Every structure is written in structure tokens, then in C-alpha cells.
Length: 225
Ligand SMILES: Nc1nc2c(ncn2[C@@H]2O[C@H](COP(=O)(O)OP(=O)(O)O)[C@@H](O)[C@H]2O)c(=O)[nH]1
Ligand SMILES: [Mg+2]
Image 1: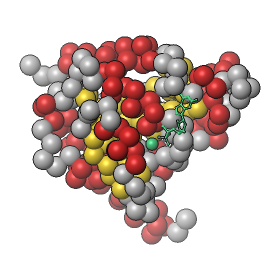
Image 2: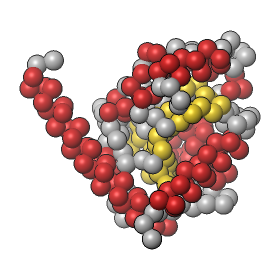
Image 3: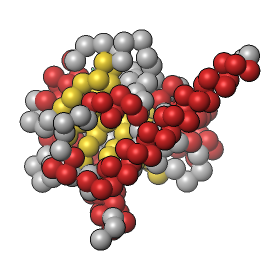
Image 4: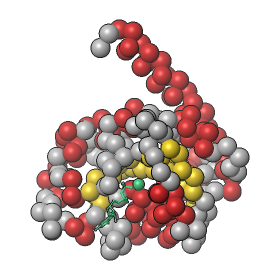
């Protein structure tokens, strides 16, 4: 890449990092636990989020932002949970950035929330470079995508705190080799925590919800008194 393009790209990312740090401070002050979801298109982010909002919403105050290039289909799907949801449409942009999140939060009282979920644009490449100020970044990998995606798209796994193997109900039909997938995840990001879930059958959702509860408790414990 010519030096000028590299320089512009570096400046864009530095600006995003500064804005994400500001968002992280704002989230900490409001005491809201922010969870980002990233994956390729169709890995099951919205289906999982829909179940998460419905189940967690029974005992905590939850809300979501959802990013796509076009349509508000996912926001419409997610609102059936009863949670407040805002759609971000990015036009031609292949990821969310901190400025889009900040703008989408305008007028939203964050102190009225326990959890804010951010569903990123479906893409295993671009979102990796853009911090959104999340407390927990979760990468989803469906059994239908094959076991080798961590080897092919390592950067998104480097930046994740947790990996979810999704659509577990389809594992057998897809000939999914979970032991191989876990070995490859561990090769790319040693020690990365992995949970297996199915939004359809509900398998693994209690462990996922418990993990979210743990992240919120950690955040409360770290909050200044
Ligand atoms: N069998 C099965 N299908 C799922 C599951 N989660 C999502 N899907 C389906 O996979 C497709 C894509 O899911 P969606 O949540 O829109 O993925 P997103 O693009 O990552 O938000 C939809 O047809 C969902 O019904 C699951 O756990 N099991
Ligand atoms: Mg979606």
C-alpha cells in the first residue's frame, strides 16, 4: 500500500480508538455492561440476541444496537423481545465504528440499562480493527461455516474475549468436527473461552446467560465507588 494510504488509515483508527475510549468511560460511569457480537453474515447473531434479550430481559434491563448495510429488518426482529432496539444502517461501510455507536446512543439514558448489546455488521474482517468501547467482544462461529475460519480470519479472534459455536443443533447434519474446531481456535488464540449454543433448541443458553451475568458482576466490582 502507498505510504499516504497507510497514514490515512492509521489516523482513522487512532481517531476511532480515542472515541472508543470515551465511550468505554461513559459506559463505566453509567454502570452498563456492553457486549459486542461479531461474526460472518448469517452465523446467528440476531437469533441469539433475540433469545438473549427475551430471557435476560425478564430479570435485567437490556437494550440493543444493530448494524447492517441496509434495512431495519434485524431491529424489527429484535424488538419483538420487548427491549428497546435501534438500527444503524451503514450504507457501504462494512463495520460499525465508535462514532456510529455514539450517534445511535444520542438521547438514550444509559443509566437505565444493565446490558447494552451491539450487533456488528456481518463480516469477519473489517470489524476487527474498530473498538466500540465494549466490555466483552464475542465472536460467533456457526457449525455450518466449517472448522477452519479461525485459521483464515485470525485477527477477529485475536480481539475477542469469548467465542460462541452457534447452531449446535445442526452440528451432526453439517458433519461438524467440534474437537478440530476447538483445536484450531486454540491455535489462533490460545486460552480463548469457547461456549457452544443453539438459539433454536436453547442448548447452551443458560451457560451463555451465566457468562453475561459474570461480566456484569465484574464490571460492578471494578466500578469506582
Ligand atoms: N438451526 C438453527 N438455525 C439458526 C440458529 N440461529 C440462527 N439460525 C438461522 O440462521 C439464519 C441466519 O440467522 P441470523 O440470526 O439472521 O444471523 P446473523 O446474520 O448473524 O444475524 C436464519 O435463518 C436463522 O433462523 C440456530 O441456533 N439453529
Ligand atoms: Mg443479524
